[in-house]
Image 1 (cartoon, rainbow, N blue to C red):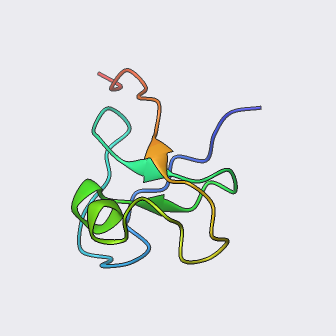
Image 2 (image 1 turned 45 degrees about the vertical axis):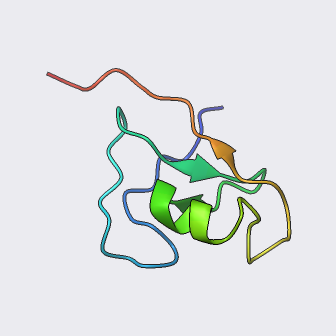
Length: 61
């Protein structure tokens, strides 16, 4: 089972999150750009869980 690699920040919705770029996720796979995660002190506003660096996938050629 693979992570759902969402392509938009759930807070600002303007940041495009690429599969090979930086993003933060919680255990429910809520996804945020790094600036928004930093602004929220790495706490998910949906579940209260910790936001951590999302693993990166190799970009598709």
